[in-house]
Amino acid sequence: MLAIFAAAIACIVGLGLSPALAFTGAAVLIAALRLLPSEEIYRSIDWSVIVLLAAMIPVGQSFENSGAAAIAAQWLGEMLTGLPLVVVLAALCSVTLVLSIFLNNVATAIIMGPLAIDAANLLHVSPDAALLAVLIGASSDFLTPIGHQNNLLVMGPGGYRFSDYARMGAPLVVAVVACAAITLTLLYG
Image (cartoon, rainbow, N blue to C red; front, side):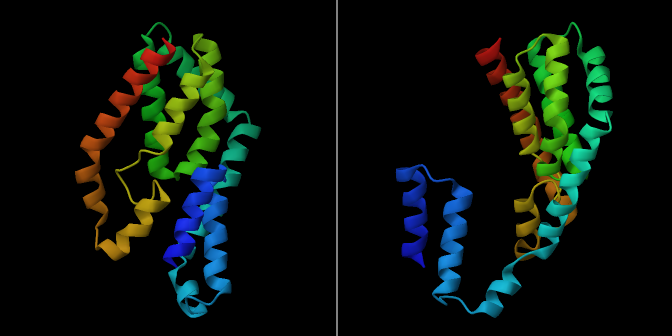
């Protein structure tokens, strides 16, 4: 199994293959070669995460299709008008992060992506900077186990409680938002 894992990493690094594709191929190969019993493979899949991801994607699409994203972008644009770029980017990152507490990072990125582009156009800010702020915010929910599937995956095996995430994640969230806003301002300001 170690050789298969190393081959997947080599394909990512050497051939530029997508990590999702390389690791999915490695998992399929491990299952096909019966290196793990099929019962163990089925037990190790966290079905709650898969169902959560499948259920949240339509939420993001309906947010965009209903016009709610445009309304939210207008409101966000009005609130951030006249503020320095670093504050605008920190706000976009923070709003995304807060939304990912209630949804998950994939659904949040789906919802916030169009909103960030609309808000960036209203504020005359680089859409790339706004999208990067959304990307960082969607990937930085260290406050709850449901914000990112990796948080949820380690909760049970690690013996973590829901409150452990907020206690340890809050300082990390502040540091990530501040670093992201400053770095993006330096790159796109």
